[in-house]
Amino acid sequence: MPPAKFCVAERVSSVFSVVPPIKDRNVVSTWFFFFVPILEGIPVIGTLFMLVWAFTGDNRSRQNYCKARLLWQLIVLILCSMVVTAGILPLLLKQAGYTRTLPVQSMHRAKHKSSEE
Image (cartoon, rainbow, N blue to C red; front, side, top):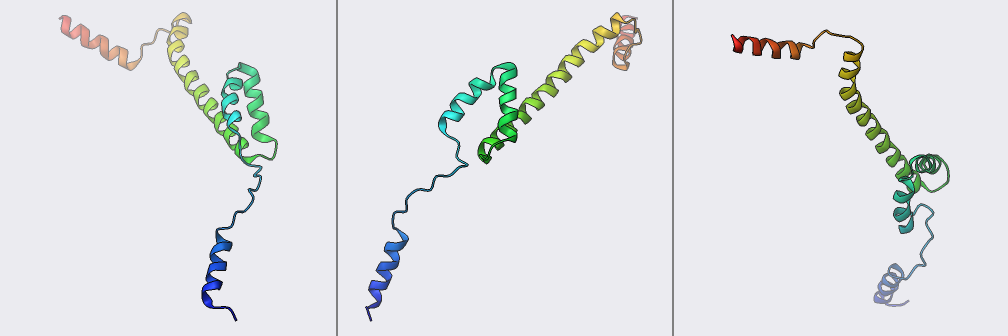
C-alpha cells in the first residue's frame, strides 16, 4: 500500500493535467464581429443576411447576435417612424385643410392676446 502523500500527488496532477481543447461550435470568430457590421451596412443585403443567420444554422452565438441586431434595427425603425410622423403630420393636416388648432396652440394664442391687451 503506497503512502497517502502519493495518492494526493496523483490527484493534484490529474486535476492540473493538460486537456486538449474541445472545438466549440458555438464560438463566433473575431472575423465575424469584424465583417458583420460592414455587411450589415449594406441596406437590403445586410438585413437579409441577418434574417438568415438569426433563424438558421447550428451556431447559437451567431443566432443570438443576429437576433439582437435585428431587434435593434426594429427599435430604431419604430423610433424614426415616430419622429418622422410627428414632424410631417402637422404639415399634412395643414395641406388637407384641417384648421382645428391643438389645445396647446389655442392656450398659447390666448396667452398672447391677453398680454397684448
